[in-house]
Image (cartoon, rainbow, N blue to C red; front, side):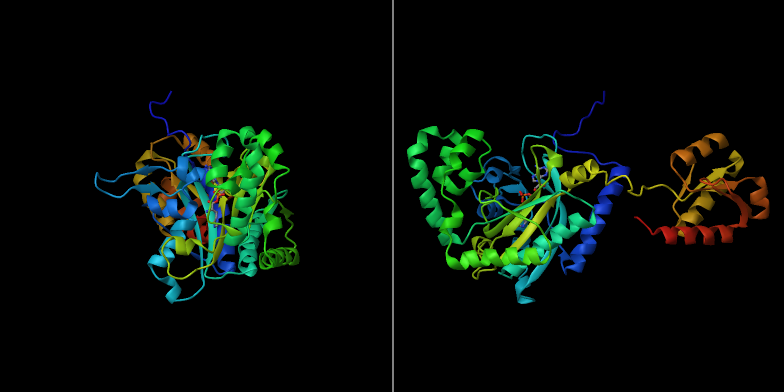
Amino acid sequence: MAQYQSVKGTRDIFPEEAAQWRVVERVVRTLAATYGFGEIRLPHFEYTELFQRSIGSTTDIVGKEMFSFLPDPNGRSITLRPEMTASVMRAALQHNLFSLAPVQKLFYIGELFRKERPQAGRQRQFTQFGAELLGASSPAAVAEVISLMMQVFASLGLTGLKLRINTLGDSEDRQRYREALQTWFAPFHDCLDDASKERLEKNPLRILDSKNPAMQELMAGAPRLYDYLKASSLEDFEKVLFYLEERNITYDIDHRLVRGLDYYCHTAFEVTTTALGAQDAIGGGGRYDALARELGSSVEIPASGFAVGMERLLITMEKQGLLAATPHDAPLVYVVVQQQDLADHGMQLAWRLRNAGIATEIDLAGRSMKAQMREANRMRASYALFLGAAEYATGNYALKNLATSEQTTLTLGAVMQFLREVATKRGSDI
Ligand code: HAM
């Protein structure tokens, strides 16, 4: 039993799994570039008010799930970021990016922190990749971010994902709807659970998000936001759906989808998978035109974006058998030293190979030749390069292909050239 344990809700990722992460990250980076999004890297903590003002103080994230602390007794409270959208907008406003170009397209891959009860697919430290399109308020911008997200899924080979989509209208639509909800629920007040009572009072829309089956049953008869939308809001939503259809992106309209963050307006969406059990959301996003003003901007900066949970994505890929073909970090060549007095020469040889960009392994523990061969096979090295007295004297080395057992004798220059070519053909995966 280990003396030290990692904190509950966190995970350690070892090299083989890290290689799988890199496959996903590479697809994200390539497609983000294809769609014209540049990478943004942000601090892991921000002033607490940033999240209170953006995500909303009555949400679960702000109310219960933030890791907040005081850096010093008189300092301002700081919070480990529970999501990225607010930080992206904060950074864009702070650095006045909009004076350079009115539309900013940014993507990220980063760690987030939420004090949720850990369970499969739900962690206290997790990772998201996502994209934010700032400065363009249109159904086209929403369709753009949804398309990028869905193309990442498709490129990774994922199937059976469900895109649920809804419109939350503009702030006037929602105000009328909030009042309608409060009026409709008033006679049922005593039937509501405590959480729903609180939501009805503070944030009525979130009442629709209840997971309690009794509440869901009650909700079935409640008014729908859709029926409170003005014509322009409906038109906006129809246009988003039109773009999705044009791109063969299938979706389900879900009038109950409100999402757990308050900054959304108009389109909101979520992608779910059956592979995850209770934590079925793999990604989500929407439009958030009012966020910039909430953060102090004097002008409105309309925006939309999405984020996908990396861990949940990888669990889904594993369940769908999509991780098997992932390349691992095997060395290309293992230098096998046949006698111990050549160990220093072996080290020098390995250094020269590595210096030429060839992934090389060598024994550092003075093990027998047999043990070195066993290790080379365990590491799944492609080649073994033998160093014995004859090789040292003549400068000609025996290179063995460990898959076919074919062996050739070459000068060191020829070995290096050959291995370089193999490495180039395979492509580097660093
Ligand atoms: P979110 O729905 O809170 O949205 O999170 C997006 C995704 O992050 C979820 O669908 C899920 O896959 C993953 N996730 C969330 N919490 C956890 C957790 N505790 N453990 C593991 N995975 C988790 C946002 O964060 C918004 N910022 C999305 C967005 C971007 N909206 C506009 N732009």
